[in-house]
Amino acid sequence: MMARPLGGKVCLVTGATRGIGKGVALQLGQAGATVYITGRTLKRTNNIPGSLEDTAKEVESRGGRCIPIQCDHTDDAQVRGVFERIKQNHDGQLDILVNNAYAAVKAISSNMSKRFWEHDDNMWDTVNSVGLRNHYLCTVFAARMMVPRQQGLIVNISSAGGLRYLFNVPYGVGKAAVDRMAVDCAHELRKHKVAMLSLWPGSVKTEFITEYLAEASEKAAEDNAAAKRTKALFIDGESPEFSGKVIVGLAQDPNLMKKSGRILLSADVAKEYNIRDIDGQEIHSFRSVSVMLKMAGWQRTAAVIPRFIKVPYFMVTLLNSKF
Ligand SMILES: NC(=O)c1ccc[n+]([C@@H]2O[C@H](COP(=O)([O-])OP(=O)(O)OC[C@H]3O[C@@H](n4cnc5c(N)ncnc54)[C@H](O)[C@@H]3O)[C@@H](O)[C@H]2O)c1
Image (cartoon, rainbow, N blue to C red; front, side, top):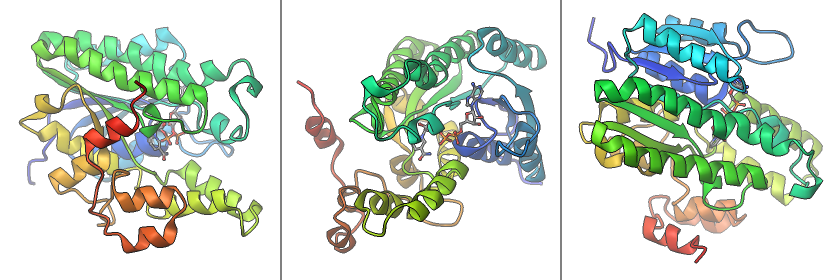
């Protein structure tokens, strides 16, 4: 059997019962790593799609090794327990942490039309206790294992909402903070040879998004421009495994430390490493002028502009500057 690129590596993916976390776990496992996964649901029930057992079985059906740990990431003691277990089982070894768990997809999508003062008082905590505070806690525990071994990679799963308004206020503030956390932690980790970065997937066809779009298009009138735009974006969207393929690529990059402390777009890294999605599709980053026009609702103009024409990073920064 051929040696697999991440053979011998120990990884943890938080929130991997479904969505991007599951996709990342599948790819890390397929690449040969031992993958610990967390989530609240051990066994599948009728009303919640996905479970730790489902993900673990799928990783193992691809020849990978997956260890599910039931953990509610709002509970610090449970989170600490996950890292203690990995530490004991692997003599302190943890090579990759993917901070992915996110509790707010449903709360955000069902309150899309509300302004921040109209949300329930607990919206901030729903969005940011798992999606921000817990990422920091996991990063602290992971760094305590990685720094003594002078190696490791920590990835925060974030989004373009860290740069400009998307969905709602706690969402954007959380994403901006998760991005900044990666940059600042990487600063302190650099001399210990541990890399940390923030990764922005594009539009990802997760189980929830697929279901949401199907329901939305049933409900929406044919001329609902916003619904049409969203649907158009996700039709060309990524699979949940795409960012997993990118993380496998990053973990093998001999120059990984050059990328540490940066915000990276999954599609841009994939282009650099020559990675395509699991169905062979090339994924275009939101820096592509054509993708931007599509997001703005200019479908016809978008269709005639080649997708490889991209807005340079310095211009993205300038256009979004708040100074
Ligand atoms: N779906 C997209 O298009 C998209 C695009 C860019 C970035 N992202 C980001 O990717 C991340 C994951 O999003 P997703 O779409 O895969 O979400 P999802 O809702 O499909 O999956 C979230 C995962 O987190 C787990 N989780 C939630 N609360 C938890 C808790 N308290 N304890 C333990 N586990 C918990 C869930 O069980 C699930 O496994 C988020 O940060 C999201 O903003 C998503």
